[in-house]
Amino acid sequence: KSASQVLASTTYPIGDSGNGGVCKPNVTKYAAMCWCAGILSVDLNTGTMQCDGTQLGNIAQTDTMTVDVSITAASATNHKNFLCNPPPKKPKPQYCSHGYWKQSQHFDNWVGYSPNTQFSAVFDNAFPGKTLLQVLQQGGGNLNRLGRETVGALLNAGKLDNFPYTQAEVIAMFNAAYPGTLGSYANLVEKFEIPENCPLN
Image (tube, rainbow, N blue to C red; front, side, top):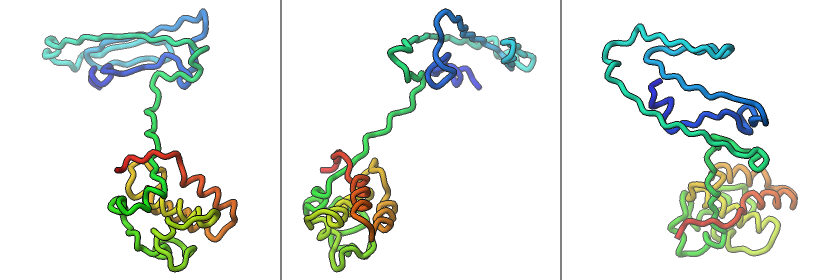
């Protein structure tokens, strides 16, 4: 690899909660850097490094390199789970409530389905003769509540980038739970109903 690939804005952990553990008190560790104009080989057992520059042409005489190295140490007591290269944070899940989706001014955000689509054309026939909008509008708990959240989840999945499920998954999850018990309905409601985070108008 080129020097820019190996060195540019790159962090190499000496020790953290995920890479060999923390550095213990009174234990010395060394960090070595070697610039090789050619092919570098390293013996990991002895730490011996060899550089073979026999294949390098005279053009290398004009090459230059500047390196700026910094070392950061953090207390293991106060940062037990510290990682030098932490994974990127997942974006907060997006969610618009079923109350959002049943408002006529938001019908233009419905994707893949319309308010007049029959519920039974999408899911198992838990609400005979009712449209998706009518299921959103009905009150009550148990199956009715699951119906509202299911239609809301279907529409969230079609419109929002960071909703946890796809439309196909929402359909499969409802069909797996219906017909079922009040407990299974409540469990699915908990999956579909997440904290409000609606980015839509």
